[in-house]
Image (tube, rainbow, N blue to C red):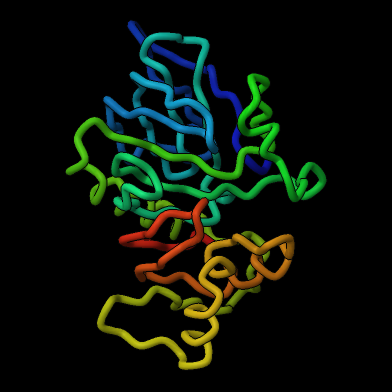
Length: 226
C-alpha cells in the first residue's frame, strides 16, 4: 500500500465515467456523491467533481477534466470529521488528515502545499465540500463505516478495540485529561513528534468536539480511523 494521496485517472464508462475499482479483491462502491469540491491542504478550491467512496478508498474525480482525479486509501486517513466552523474554513466540509510517507515528511511543508508544483505525497489535509451541506452527516457515516472496515494491519490478532464513544459515554479520566490539555495530539498534530501522535491515533477513536489550533478546525464530530 502506498501511503498518502495519489493521482487517480482510471475511469470506465461513458461521459465522465466512473473509477475503475479493484473488484477482484473485493472492492465495491459504498457511496457516490456528485457536486463535491475538493481542497488539498491550503491550495485553491477545485470545483465540479464527484466523490466516490469505496470500502477501500476515497476517490474524487473532476467532472470537467477526465485527466484529473485523486484517491487515498482509508488506511492512510488518520482522521475524518465534519467541520462547520467558519473560522477554520468558510464553508462546511468533510475534513480529513492524511498519513504520509515518513521518509518524505518535513516539519515545514508549506512551500509544497501552497506552491504551483503539487507534490501529493506531502499533502496531509484534504477537505471535501458537497454543494448540499445537508449531505455532510451521511457522508461522515459512510466514512465511519469504511474506516471500521480498514483496521490498522499490524494490530495484534485477538486484540479487541472498542474505542468509539458516544456523547453520553465517559472515557478514562486520565485519557480525557490528556486529550483536553493536548487536543492537537489527539488528532495527529504533534508539533514535530509524529511517532507520539501516531500512537495516540492508534489508541483512541472518539466522537467529540474539539477546539483546535488555527490550522485545525473546530470539529462537530470526529473519529480516527487508526
